[in-house]
Structure formats: C-alpha cells, structure tokens
Amino acid sequence: MSDPTQNLPEHEKHGFVRAAVVSPELRVGDAEFNAGVIRAEMKRLSGEGCRVAVFPELCLTGYSCADLFYLPTLQKQALAALRQLAEESSYSGMLTVLGLPLAVDGRLYNMAAVAGAGRVLGFVPKTFLPNSGEFYERRWFSPAHTLGVAEVEGVPAGADLLFEARDLPGLVLGVEICEDLWSVIPPSSHAALAGATVLANPSASNELLGKAPYRRNLVLQ
Image 1 (spheres, one colour):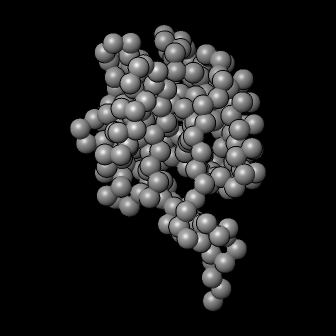
Image 2 (cartoon, rainbow, N blue to C red):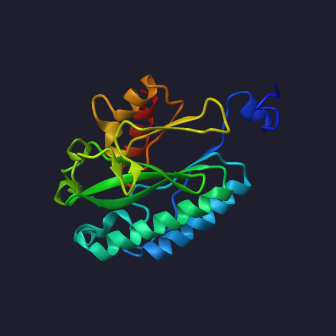
Image 3 (cartoon, rainbow, N blue to C red):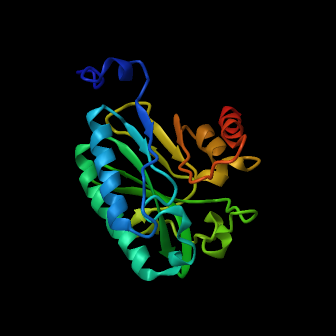
C-alpha cells in the first residue's frame, strides 16, 4: 500500500502546515467588493502552499455595520458571496475561515464559516458576545447557545464543530470568534481537548495601547 503522505511537501510530512491570517482592506456593507478582495488573497495564499487561511470576523460585510446588520439585503449578499467563494475554494487545497452575519429562525448570528473542497463545510456561531465599552454585539446578534438547529442551509452548524483535512493527516481545525478567547474557559480549550491541532480565532478587535501583547498572552495560555 502506498504512503498517502509521500507526495506532501517536506514540512507537512513532519506535521507542520502553513497557516495565514489575513487583514484585508474592506468596505463596510459592500459584500461584493469584500468578496473580491478575499478571492484575490485566497488565490495568492493557495499559490504559496497555505493550508489554513483565516480572515477577520464578519469580513464579508465589515464589522462596523451597526444596524445595517438587520438589513435582509445585506445578509443575502453576504451569504451569496460566501457560497461563491466556497465554490471557488475547490482549487485552493485550503481550509478557509470567513465571517458573516447569518439569520437563523428569526435570530441573527455572528458566524464563522469554514470553506474548502468547493463548498461550505460548517458554520460556527460566536459564543460570547461583548457588550461593554465600544462593543454592543448583543444589540444585533444572539449567542451560540440559542442556536436550536444542527444544520443551517443544509450545512452543519454549532460551536463544537471540528474540521479534519482528508488529504493531510493530523490537520484538525477548531474555530472560535474573537471574544470567545477572552472567556474563562474558551471554546478553543474544548476544541483542543476534542482533538483540534490548529485553532483559528477570526477577530475584528480594535487596537488599543497594550491590547496586542495582552492578546498574545491569552493565546499562550
């Protein structure tokens, strides 16, 4: 029997993968423009042998849409852009994490969608919603525990999903969103215990003095 890893790049044979975090220039409320920027970055990263690409929280619409999140038109445009990017992911060989507002049963969720192999593989809702200072996500979004379904748009959905790469043994992706990492026991801890080997945290956090090193310390914990 042939070794399934024999054609892999040398670093992947030894358990390493190339992962990228991308912070593109986006337009608030312009899903079509944002999808174009994301598409270009996906092609670039695929050409560089990247296996996991993480784009910001709510990247398809922009994080600061405020009450525009309520607009069904914007929600539909974001979902359509996601579907198109997912279809185009068949060439990339990557697991790509994208963010969008997604309406489910009359509630709106801050979702991370994982795309790969030409389709949307799953939706992960944000568990902990910040609601202090400059953040007031609870005005628009519902937390993960209120999601009463296991599928959305025919795709698995839940805060406990893991994504395993079929063509790369050992690559198991767990996803949480921004504020989730700041909780006492973040979802990523449960994901790691369940077998995740790579943890993604798409974020749209603002920059404040001392915040970057604090985030690094959170990750180290």
